[in-house]
Image (cartoon, rainbow, N blue to C red):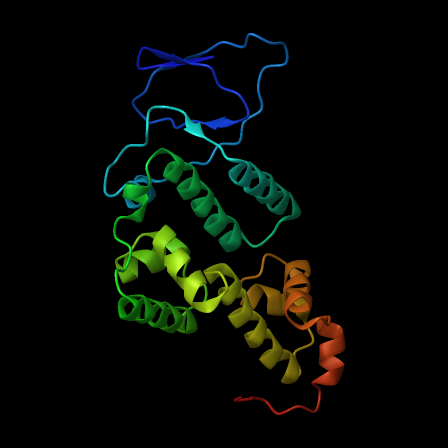
Length: 230
């Protein structure tokens, strides 16, 4: 049981709710065992981008559809596995947007590029920025391109068939393969240079993209040219 702004709500696992900074709340647990919640902390800039420029989140509970609940659980599993932080952030933004769309889809849709040519130009600009610096975070990239993180993620995925975080990993894996083909043997140094969390993260990413481990690829690419332009 949650009381906020003088309004009481009965919350269960089919609902989500938002907390704005100025709100005073009270919770009571009518059943033993308390509760178990996942909390997403959103910056004011992200909130405004998801709410059509409004600085606050809805004050009534939001329905959490089965699809939202499953993605929430998958996101937790990915976080426990230590998946790429950029991918976790992008998925968290999409999860928040999906929950907010249950309340009112209009604010979340605000600012979406209206034409196919505008969407194509946005994707091209995102590719150019990531090629120059694959470590640009989604919020940073969205600010540069003057769109919301959620809509940038959605438009990019729709146009390319992959997420920004996956595209970023592919760029980094290709940079790693260039280094491996050039004779790099220190995988820990390679992982650090390319901003992977650690050597294991690098190996997982390379195997996910190529089906092979870096050590196998080192043997296969040992006599390969230093660069390859398809």
